[in-house]
Length: 81
Length: 265
Image (cartoon, rainbow over all chains, first blue to last red; front, side, top):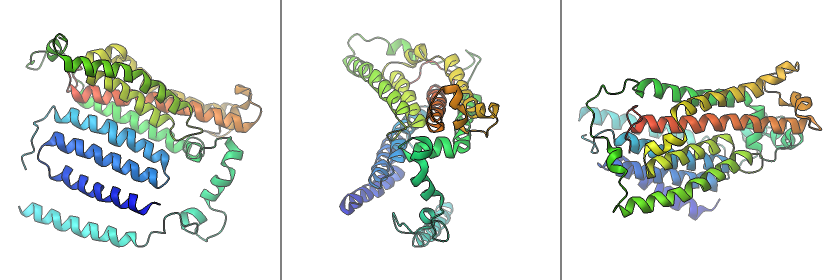
């Protein structure tokens, strides 16, 4: 384990999670959620779980972001709560 | 406001319990943790068996692939069925089979298709046109090379599905559906399950257990049972890839058009 690498990823992970929860623009939230997925993918790869990292990169950062955006575009863009 | 206070209290308590539970976890990569060394700390644990015997049993260097598709073949079969069911659920909920029953907005395809003067769309479209075949070839490599490197049917299938989604995003959904129509993705999703279940079922014909691919030795003409298991894993991965590819594209196509398969993003 590379501790500095770990700390950098984890800090960005927390930042990305908070931003994607708090931002009002749903499209921005979806994009930041994609970044969150990619950071988790980096974390898996760094821990040696390369197969899981690959799945996370394709599903978490790739397809699910597109699916969320496809859903958002069929709703209103801004959250009301 | 009251609901928010209650929610934050619940979240805080749950988080505190989770953090407290984390302290009981074994250290990362601890060889004496229960998962790695068995409950008694002996040498008879499952993971030790896999590490020592997987290559001898199946001739597959990537332990993860061998465990998922061979030792735990049942699990993966029904995981694939879960994905298939998710696709069918999306279809059942969203797909609108009657055509003109909703107040139809002006068909966006007619405006999207005018390329003249729209340089942005040309650049994106041509870049994706170049990228899509590369993505698909890499996805096939991932499916076929899952024995030796990270990857396998699921990841390769998602990438194949994503390549069709890329066509739909860069051009229009009509372009993607022209290459991968609704009839073909429904058929391929079912075919994937059929391939997996068929490869898993064949050993029963030879009087062996379900998902015991070693029994396919005579059928495949391999020298030992190990290579037959290796080829059986490949057949299974192919089935997973078909189903996942079709379901990913089906979910996107139905979600982005509210089940009308017209217009789209």
